Amino acid sequence: MKKLKRYINRSKSIVTGKKNLEHLYSFKDFPVFMGCVDGPQKDDIVADMEWMIDPETGIIQLKKLIPLKILYLNQHCDGTGQIWQDHYSEFARFIKKHKPGKNILEIGGAHDWIAKNYMNLVADVNWTIIEPNPQYVKNDKIKVTKGWFDEKFTIDQPINTIIHSHVLEHVYEPVKYLQHISGFLKEGDKHIFTFPNMFEQLTRKYTNCLNFEHTVFLTEYIVDYLLKKYGFNILAKDYFKDHSIFYATEKIDKIQTDLSENKYDEYKKIFFDFINYHKEMVGDLNKKMDNMKEPIYLFGAHIFATYLFAFGLKQDKIVFILDNSPGKQKKRLYGTHFKVESPKILKDKGSINLILKAGIYNEEIKKDILENINDQVIFW
Image (cartoon, rainbow, N blue to C red; front, side):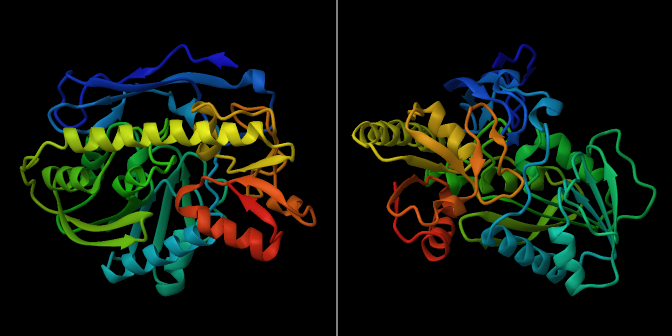
């Protein structure tokens, strides 16, 4: 594997703009891409993942950012799983409830799940997607622009509402992003979006919370502040499990507001609780593996597996990484030598050991395997 030589350095707090960030923790030689590939491991790129904290606000953010063309090598979000499908349908109903108007721009619509669900509820709509990798968009009723939603993006049609789903946590400069959205809207137009409930995720020790793609610990507290400061009135929120928060907002005259409290102590503790939990858990898994002669499988060809390896999970006894996504199967998890297989290969294998540490998706995955593939699987 090759070490990344050129980073995008983010030395200032995204909230205050000050260069007073404090180092928290670094992961050395972390794979820069979260998906699966066909090429050899020698072509993979690794980089140091350095987490910082703003002592004045408590915001946690990544110091060195990966160039976007490297980070988003290909599309690895295909909406696999019931939780994601439920999320898309619930979010579509949430959009409809807040009367978005006829002309909708979706930022980062990697697939057409949200549009498809919304169009089942509302037929008369003009839906446009701006997305760098729209390979899963199959709906011919959607206008697709391949590209980034940045200062170069323009659109030659009216827009009543801008929506985005699990995009805000990916942007490197959330303030500029919100300002750019505001520039496309008139006063009273809607801005409706969903993003991960990162506070719940990190508190629950989920490994898909912070990574090279999710570069800021965007809690509800921080997002509320940024929206109010940069010209959006919050109309409503809904909570989808401990997975996501739905926001309905409208553009208004700019409201100046300050953060009411410093979250430094609280957020720093949550972060190190996450680190220490995984160090201990991986240590226990390694001891268990040392005493195991039977084959061991690992679920999650994604950041779930990558983080476990970064915390030191031994690889020599793991046979395959399993994943439900057809787009990942038969490929190799980036940053590792492991080929990815469907959980269906566990059928008729009897008692099998499977490491499953996939956060909110654990129960859905476990239920499917036990009920439909192999009811003798032992989950670690």
